[in-house]
Length: 116
Image 1 (cartoon, rainbow, N blue to C red):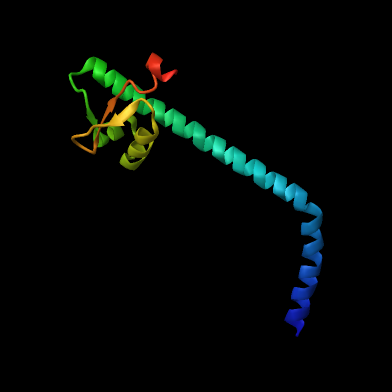
Image 2: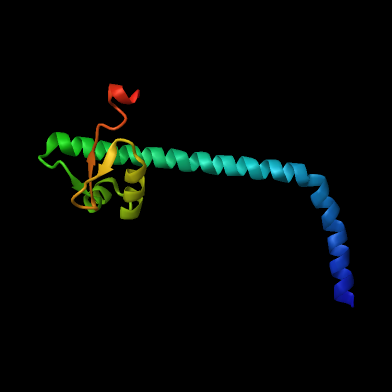
């Protein structure tokens, strides 16, 4: 029974502490979630720019129009799954129709007709 009394006393002290600090805990939780989301957005934008710049420079300096996920991954030092994930989301990069593991730049999002 000593253990039950200890647990009861512990909970009796913790519950008021949580209740008095609940608004602060919720605020910090929300701030942490927003900061985490912003960090993810920043990393995705940064890595997406790396991929885009590599494809742009590769098209300008070589005769290759398409680049494989593996080649992009090695050049920009990201995993192949991350390259694929970011390339799918990027509005100026598209997957080639012939091979699923090849990418190229597209005019999507840059034409006057698209309004961007």
